[in-house]
Length: 327
Image (cartoon, rainbow, N blue to C red; front, side, top):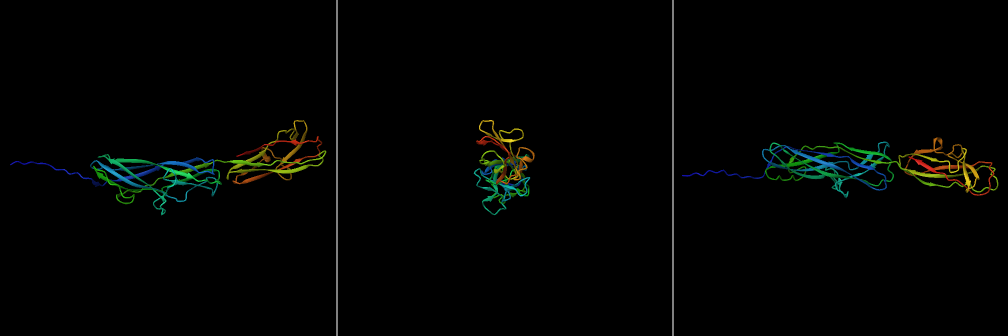
């Protein structure tokens, strides 16, 4: 009799138990300098998720399905220097900035976490790991009255989480978990932190500077000629500013002067900050106006006086004064 001995092997894909951990990091979402607050500003950051699985007895494969949660439905960055001032922004999952990046704890379907699937091999005695990156898209909507300054919002572990399920198999491909909370081995959720920041630079503009007309005078100037005008400026809210008026084009001997054409005939005059005409306008010291921007027009009165007596030839006298705003 003869005996034939053989060994039969049958392989099948089987689930295998392994410990999988996942963690995430996010770079700072820095919108940079937001010069034009009447237009939206976009920025982006990078999310990196890394998962590790302990070694199995044979070659294996792990599939992970995870939810990347970022909380806070209302998102704004507080101003570091101005109490109550904040800059609104939003976080998105897509480059077109239509899908809000939210959290699974939020009921609104339009404000949900980012779902990521990760698939990687797990080697004998070594284990395995996989990593994936995604872009976090940000946008600051137009906010015309936003204040100047530095803005910062910090997300902490209380605001974020990586929730995941994993499946591992021997030799064959693993089946993906149904969701990040079912259909596999539940992993221990982890958290991450990151910052969102922006800077709005100070800004001022001179809106108008009305001409100061002393009117007509017949003959010699025997009594002071008074009149007033104004300079209107607007500065971004929170902007510290200084406004001054120079001495004009014909200044001499401590006196502002208006000139008749190209002649050597002049009419002395002075510009004051107050209606009592005691504090002259200048570019330094008490002669300048100072303040903090409100985002609206801020008119500054200019009180003029032509002192008497002055006896000058008839004609039109003119001077040009430069307004300087420093911020």
